Image (cartoon, rainbow, N blue to C red; front, side, top):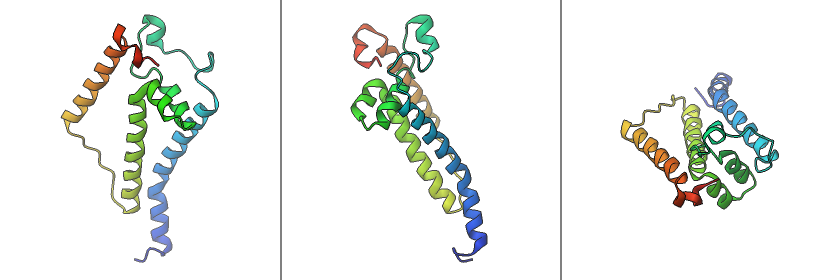
Length: 141
């Protein structure tokens, strides 16, 4: 079949519907966070772990990080929550692979080796512990 055939185009559009929907949802969330400043008190709820224990979770600063990314301030985004910025980049890369595979008619298969998942978990744990120690103040959001 030819790429200009209506059936092929409908199939491609159907395969791209879910990635497009995911992108629309993520873009909408980033647009909202970019518009409603998380640096101003009262716009978002306080992290429950921070409120109850005074400890920063690995996600603390993620909204401020997203706000800074939307406004093009990469340094502020990294200072607010560097792992979140890496997560945004990882999402963008994974989404791009998803779209390319969908266009080619191939399914997206995500099968990371367990060592990768354990390593990511360990890095987030170390990040969380260090940011809550006295010398880890530079990792506070």
